[in-house]
Length: 127
Image 1 (cartoon, helix red, strand yellow):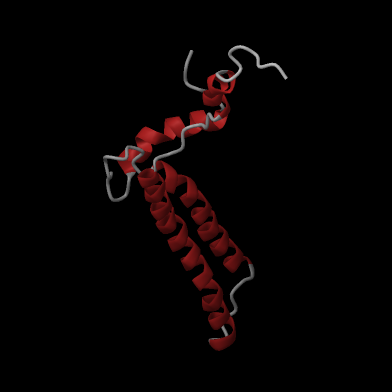
Image 2: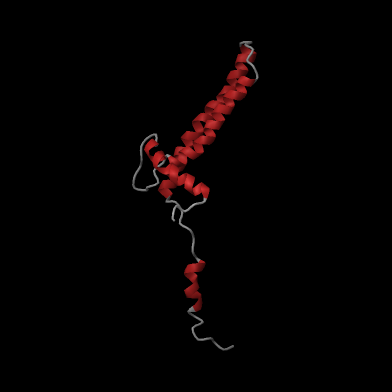
């Protein structure tokens, strides 16, 4: 087979395009988000799970007639709070790898919510 002139340089010209990967969040920021989500999800979830034996103890142990809707409402509130904790854990952590952020992350959340909603809507923020 005859060699084509410039054929050896052809794959090298395409390799940057072929090996393009979108940028990922920095590992420090990702770990910060995961640890924040551990608290904002774990605490309400744990409290919500503790209410099941508590209501069982009230009904069986102390013979208090607890309406059926009370455990449902309490578990709905705490499990819903845990679900919201996923989003709050992401937006309340500092997205700057060099800055730790505050303990509760309220300032970071105020700054990151618009970016979060914009990304969910699919907009790039550029006009």
